[in-house]
Amino acid sequence: MQEITERIATCVELGKISKTTPFPPHMKGQDGADEIAAEALKNGVHPDALLAGCMQGMERIGKQYSENLVFVPNLLMSAAAMNAVMKHLKPYLESGALKRKGTFIIGTVAGDLHDLGKNLVAMTIKGGGFEVIDLGVDCSTEKFLNAIAQHPDCSVGLSALLTTTLINMEKSVQAIKKAHPSVKVLIGGAPVTDNYCRQIGADFYSANPQGAVEFLNKNKNI
Amino acid sequence: MSIPGLTLIAESINDSVPSTHVLFEENNLQGIVELARFQAEKGAAYIDVNVGLRTPAFMAEVVQKIQQHISLPLSIDTPDPEMAAAALEVYDRARSGDPIPILNSISEARLEMFDLYQKHPFIPILLATEGKDEFGGIKMNKTAAETHATARSIVHIARQRVEGLSNDKIIIDPGIMPIGSDSTGNFRRLMNAMQLIHQDSDLAGVNMSVGLSNFTVMLPPQKADGSAVKGPLESAFLTMAMPLGLNTIVGSVKRKYALLPPDHPAMQCLTDVLNLEGMEIIMRVMSYIS
Ligand code: B12
Image 1 (cartoon, rainbow over the protein chains, first blue to last red):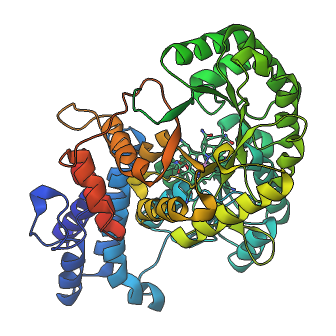
Image 2 (image 1 turned 45 degrees about the horizontal axis):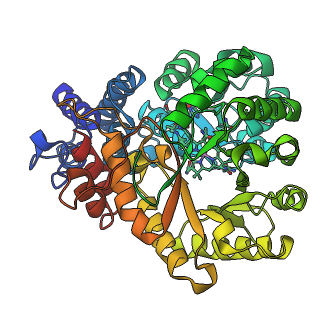
């Protein structure tokens, strides 16, 4: 079981999606996340072991990314390998046999269409073992509030890339905090700072996705 | 910077560049002038001026200060009509030997910028990246045909608002996106959109521009063997895009842009990417940068 977790973690970390994907070159022709997960479940390995592999792999790549040792394409490859495992875990997650750590709702604020950073955060948090609900771009305050109402013990992330949409981030954060004081609100995006986070009353700012996972792990509701 | 037929708008005076942000924060306008001078000496044709979220008066002051010392024409870079108005008001055309400034940029959501034209003419950069949805909201264009349609419609609007505006006094920005996260085939959309715009007789003679540095954000500066990643990919982009009508870029004076032969690894990478989908694109870029 530990061996499977480690094999999955390695595939996720290095972005080895399946046998046929040529990346990384030194693993060409070997089984990837897809085959290893399918085979393990067939052999009766508990899905927990696979989820643990995803989490470990994403954590490793997330750390390397925050230290500038790897770059966005690496993170995307890792997320794709993770998704190849998640595809097999879906029935267990739906039946409740496999539990996640909590729910994370994320969106880009109103007026802002940038989503690459938000998507990376969503993938990394999913890889951290959370259920992620992605509201997309240009999200109004109502959209955030409606989603939170359906998942009252969630945490929320808001992303903004334009100085002109920071004001909408502030409005949404304040409305969320007012309606749901116990919901943790995370913010990020290139123009966002720690200072700004305190100023608008959000709970946490991180410049990179891994920081957000670490915060959620410390503050998880279940 | 020495590709014939390519106009460089130098990008560094932009509040989103951290070192420039510091100059603005410290009100170090002498530093801004030095930056303008450096870019002028390195071959810029225009100097872009983006002061971020500051006041129109500050924008005007920066424009005046640069023009006191540098004779190149400027590209006024702001989404805010008031800021654009303040900059154009103080802009001294005689200082740069009469060429009109560029206004970067106008989208279908910011058409009031055209109201400034009559008093202070400018060359508009028209954004074809976002159009209007059926409810009047903004919508990101996802296909080459949509980008082309927005280019046509915004040029038509420009002609209605500005009498006698000819195509050669218009720049269209068809929107460049980072190749390092291009799992949706945006590079192909962009190439096809440029081709459609280039072949459209109604748009004959329009200029086209992209913010070239955005193409390689998120990539490492070097490959494992120490060779450069970004310069060659940006040059490969130019080599493929200039025959489709690209003739202007917002870019860096520090890059040595060049036209590359088809067998250059960066050219092979981009040529392959045109025929790939989804994660295959990311893998191809990974194999180029590794
Ligand atoms: C790609 C891009 C676009 C693409 C977006 C495509 C897409 N699907 O996202 C397109 C072409 C559509 C675009 C459009 C525009 N853009 Co743009 N764009 C960029 C660019 C090149 C890269 C942004 C990016 O994806 N970075 C990579 C990601 C991975 O980084 P990131 O988003 O910062 O996210 C990381 C962290 O911030 C953090 N994070 C992000 N969100 C969150 C959330 C949480 C909760 C947490 C914890 C962390 C976190 O984690 C991420 C991973 O590390 C930047 C320039 C640059 N060099 O950054 C300009 C830039 C952001 N754009 C800019 C502008 C001005 C525009 C336009 C207004 C253009 C125009 N002239 O009209 C339009 C606006 C459209 C709109 N309404 O939103 C400016 C913003 C200036 C400013 N400070 O306000 C920039 C800085 C360019 C510039 N130098 O002027 N753009």
